[in-house]
Structure formats: structure tokens, C-alpha cells
Image (cartoon, rainbow, N blue to C red; front, top):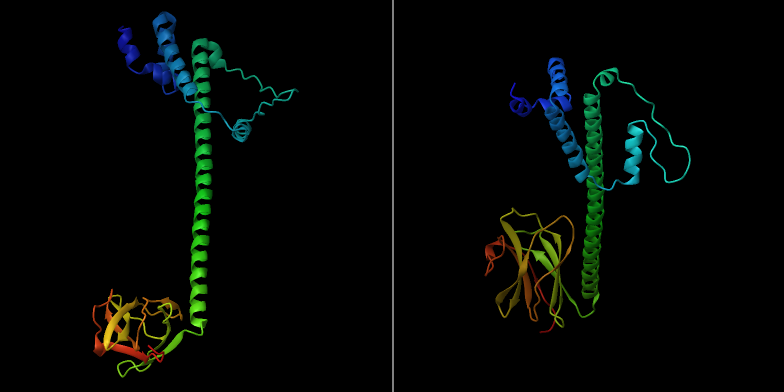
Length: 275
């Protein structure tokens, strides 16, 4: 027979991994007794599996070792002195008949156990890393949330201070004929030029439209910014203005317009502060 072709047929791999049929195993063991080269090739394959497993081995966390030994019914080795559990001896009659095959299977089982251990350690480390990443992410989100809340609190405090300042003029915005129920208040401090808007009653607009606040200065409208109406009475910080005889709100396209659409004026109020 051509021994090289027989070896390259994959019979060694099938035999060691337990995939060969009964007839193939019997023939392989018979030929091993005749050809030392075949035994050497089988041993080389077994040692290759074992070496590959050892190369990939990683330090195993103690808790993982305990779980693995518990899973296979053994007690994990202890660094303290004392009696250790000894696994019972198992006599395999088939291995007794075929020492070469028994040794090969033993090495294969050992290599498989190492590979299983590597896989479990890898899964453990992956889970541990994901947990650490999740903790870091949560800490980052908490920091961002705390920072955003601090900024919001500062803005609210500034707005309350501006609204409560005796130098701040309150302009009551009343509805026009187009929108008689529309109403809002403008809080304007001419000293700091700050303008705050509180929407009291304005319907929500389509997504392609926004409200726009104007300051009327010497009969000319000046843009103070756009805003959206909500169900909550929020304090909106608008653009600053040092002068204003009146304020008006119109409906414009989303993003605002360079000049007001007068036929869509919603509300208007005169500033009583001396200019």
C-alpha cells in the first residue's frame, strides 16, 4: 500500500478525533502495528493539538477554575496543605486492548480540556470587559447629565434673576385679530439688553413653520429669534436688544425670515420703558 497517500487521506485526524468508523479504526490500529511511520504521524498530530492549546492558554481567574472543576466533578487545587480529592481510576477495556490508541485519545481529551478552558476564560474575560465598559459608560452619562443639569440650573437662576429684577420691563403681548387668544410676556432689561419670552397661549405649528419674535425700533422690525410653542410655559432666552418701542410675534417658515409676515402677526405689546 502507499503509506503516504493513506496518511494524507485524513485517517489520522479521523481516528484521533473519534470520527473514524469501526472498520477504519480496526484497520488503522492493525497498520500501526506494522508501520512505525504511521504511529509517528499520529503522535505528531496529537502533540500538535496539545502544543497549540498550550500556546493559546491564558491565566485563569480563580473563580473560573472553581467552576470548571465543579463542572467535571473534581475539587479545585488548593494552595493550603491537606488531603486532596483523588478522582477514581477508570479502566477502559478497549484502551487496554489498544495502548497506542488509548494514549492518543488521552492526549486528545487533555488537549480538548485545555481548549475548553481557554474558551471559558475568554468568555469570562469578555463578559468582565463588557461589564467594565458598561460601568464606564454609565459613569460618563451620569457626568454628562450632571453637567447638563448644572448648566440648566444656572440658566434658570439667571432667568429668574432677570425676570425678578426691578429694572426689567414686562411687556404683555396680546393677541391680534388673526389670533385673538394668542398671548405671551416679554421680560426686557434695557440695561443688560437681555430679552426673555414666556409663551402663555400659542398653538403648536407644523414642522415647516416657527414663531418669530421681533423688536420694533423706530418703526423697523429687528429679528430677536425663532421659537416653537409647547404645552409648558417655558422661559425662552431670545436675542438681546438695547432699544425697542414694541415687540411682536409672527408665524414664519422654519428657521425664520429676514422680514415679518404682517398678515400672520399673532401678538403684539408696547414697551413702556423710557428709551
